[in-house]
Image 1 (tube, one colour):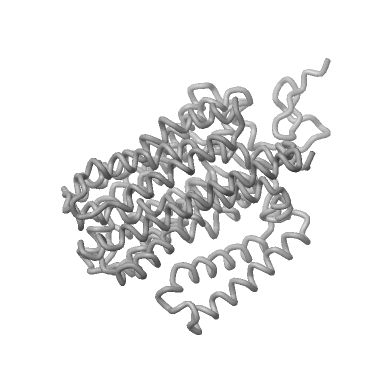
Image 2 (tube, rainbow, N blue to C red):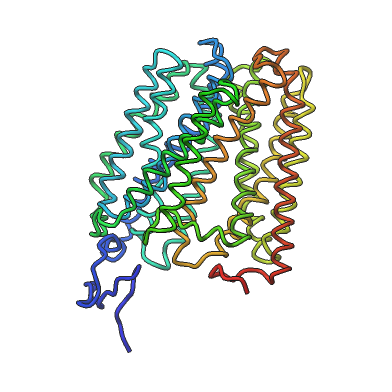
Amino acid sequence: MSHAHTVQGTTLCPQGRPSENQPSDSERLPSQVLSPAHRWLVFGTVVMGAFMVNVDASIVNVALPVLQAAYHASADVLQWVISGYLLVITAILPGIGGLSDRVNRKWVFVVGVGLFSFGSALCGMAGGMDSLIAYRMIQALGGAIIMGNVMSIVASTFPVGQRGKPLGFISSVVAAGTIVGPALGGVMIAAYGWRSIFWVNVPIGILAMVLSSIFLGNLSSGRGLRGFAWGGAVWFALAMMTLLLFVSNGHTWGWLSLQALLIAGVSVVTWSVFIVHSLRTAHPLIEISLFKSSRFTVGNLAGMLTYMLMMFPGFMLPLFLRIVLNEPIAHVGWLLMSQALAMIVVAPVGGWIADHHGSDPPAFVGMVVVAISLVWMATFHIGTSPWSVVLAQGVFGVGNGLFQSPNNVSILETVPVEKTGLTGSLMATIRNFGRVFGVAFVVLLLQSASGLDLTAKGLDKAMPPVFITGAVLAVLAALLVGLRTLLSQRYLGTSVTGVPK
């Protein structure tokens, strides 16, 4: 009986040394040599970065009404505080993941935390909206590097059979950051001004850099940069940035203006080149062939719609609470927490239902619940109680909690096991694209409903058309889940290898 151990394609002898006939994969060595206490120190160090990024992602929403009042910013300028950040992350995340697989992940992570901290300090010193948006993009560079490495570092640090617990804790930390962000942001802005929500990242980031330098071991695969899909990474970044620029600015430029048509044309060309390049290269950045599975394609499309929908209350409700209901900014953060709390409680239930009854029933019900909550939000007006906002967000969170885990399971079960990492990166990219598109779409609806009037009267007028449109999109997502069910029944489903049965 052989006593060699196989880890991520590397055969190890009983002593943990690579066998002579297999290449060494040193990125997996920490899980073999670190003590349990050291592994959890590594976990705490990298999760500190993940928590910082997720707090920042949700804390900024609370600052939108304050920024609007301080700089008299229009909605199409305000959107770029969020969209600029998400645009950079969406454009470079697949490339960051591929690069990190090939170099020493330890120092990539340290650089990412440093960039995020540096960008945060710049945001805290921003002299106006233009500089704030530019500095948010620098923040996003660091955020993408952190997001693209946390899971891999933890998986490298813990051996097979012991990864479930720390990976589960990461999900809890992400959710906790989402909850803490609005409440912390409201309190800090009320006490110290909007700049404080960026400065708070700096000491945390410096601490994370120091601890990462000390506790993280060598996390290099030894493969180097040879064979990396540089062309794919560049073409994808150009294609995604031009598409998001067109989507975000089309209503400002005019959809048929020369500038908009030029950007749209460049986007079409760069997407075409990226797709052709991906089909012809042996190691593409994104495997286009995955979209041959109807369940994979429909699942990702439905997922993109749900992340678009998250930006409807994410963008509108902070403005509604502060400007229409005149709630103190310290209260706004607390009133925005119910969605994340509901998702944390309900998401495991959605996963359990998916395991026992299939992924489509809870996903379908979840989208119906989301549609109901958005119809409820469409009724909000100047006399609405803040508690109605809290309850409606809670219902919205319940629906998303029922949908997300089952939909993710449905997507992952259509691909081979060895491609789940690639698929996860692609899903994250689609998720961020949905968020950027959602913000742009909300601003477009605001323009149509009230001419981007961010007064109490203008927002009150815009609530029904914005949220009714959101409800229609939720119904569309539910119909896509139904279509996925029909396709599975017609073709007897798809196997876990992605090949139709």
